[in-house]
Figure: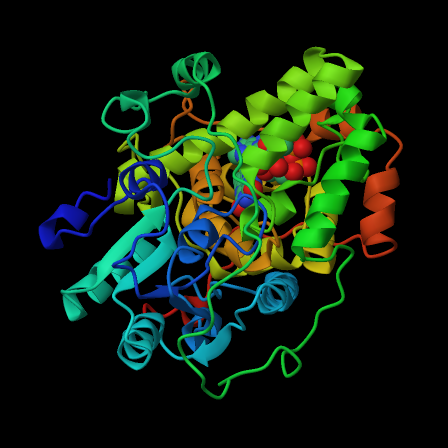
Length: 464
Ligand SMILES: Cc1cc2nc3c(=O)[nH]c(=O)nc-3n(C[C@H](O)[C@H](O)[C@H](O)COP(=O)(O)OP(=O)(O)OC[C@H]3O[C@@H](n4cnc5c(N)ncnc54)[C@H](O)[C@@H]3O)c2cc1C
């Protein structure tokens, strides 16, 4: 549980407990306000299952202009690529809810103020949301509860395999390293996906939309953000048999089916991780389990570990000294950072990776490791600037996985070896020996090495 949430007594509900008490529709329930965040889907959505029990409901999709303002790292919380993908996910969700009998309203404004306004206008007694992972999102919920003391806040675990309170090793006894966590998780049953709702209660609020999908700038992406596209992708990935070779191919720098690409839809919540887990298990029953199919669980458990770690760490997830409380020997150098972001460091493999990221919004796990290691170890940059750049650029940005992995590479995270330095020459020899990857993303744009000692004070970013 969020350490500060008890201070203002946010009410945490486990869906199973609510259903066990109520059995069926609660006669006292009147109006619910549901704000989807990382749960833009109809399948396996415990929030929607709960909404369906109310007499009326207001479902609202909020657009907060502050997402597009520069952060303290001079980057944005969300860049054009992820925004385009998210818009598709939101629009698909909007259409699906309307088909089930409840048309969501589109609201804009600073998130907390927008929710407070919706509570008043809809007359909702209950706010339903996915349990947040990031510190900032937790703070927002606390502010909403403080402004609306009578409001019942119910949170559901839509983003993780396990549910809050299910095991002590998810919370107070969360191991400081991944392996013991994985061993415990492998012994436990993950929560089964829920059936999709068949209808929704009528809307509690008839009002003009304050923003529109059509007015948003669209970045042309190679993948579509809707729930339907995510489900179809999972089906195709399993159907083509790539899961049975995953362990041999997962480290490749590129190649659509060399890894699952599920992160794209998992991050926006248009795919349920519980549904993915169950689908892999079904695949194993029909096609047989092997080291590769088993390795997919190992990686999904990395994702799971980072989610619970982020909840436990709070703001420590974003601190320079990280969880290890070790001061890295790095700093901020504006020209090096600019060169890294724009793929003009002069190191062809790193530059190619950063070009791929800029053009597509996705890079492989190996590419992320190489780019992050170069940023921290060779350019000696403060790892948080790299993490913030990935936050802006990645379509599959996930607060816990991103900042947790960056801490790991920077040597201030949960890595028992205290950081990872990837030798670029070895990486090239192993993963791009013929130079195909570099040629594809850099073409003739090979750049000169960046001079590490050119610093202009005027280039330093201003603190917020
Ligand atoms: C510096 C850095 C930053 C990263 N930032 C993100 C991020 O913002 N969002 C994100 O989803 N992943 C992040 N990752 C983890 C990983 O690179 C991606 O999850 C993976 O590349 C996504 O591609 P895929 O779905 O094909 O993965 P696959 O190899 O097919 O793995 C299956 C699933 O397991 C999970 N997974 C795999 N590797 C990891 C890992 N190291 N940590 C956590 N989960 C993992 C993902 O949910 C992924 O979809 C980061 C890794 C590094 C090194």
